Image (cartoon, rainbow, N blue to C red):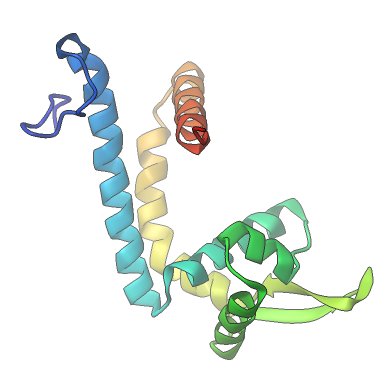
Length: 164
């Protein structure tokens, strides 16, 4: 895509003089569609559903920050019941992608971590794509990166806001 608006792809709420602004939103829409397709391919490749992959990504981020993860946090993150979370964690444990261990701070609960198998599976499946993405970002200046990051955070906030 060259930054032009594809025919029939304009947003219904845009004014005729908003073509330049809509082209940015269209590029973002195009990226999101490509990312969604990539997630589907990854799910098929790893034989997992969307929530399983979301759990592995959540656990990876928490591990990087040194934060423990309990099932209740995953339930909230995914917006599913504790019973559904237990079933999901059972599947991930059975496939060898997570480990459960007692929570040393609360003997009534457990903590969840991703296993070395999960990390290897994700690395094997996504490393080439991540390398291509880094190659896109690497030549950017610090100012370019700051603008992109600010834009993406503002877009996240725009879509996260719930209208009354």
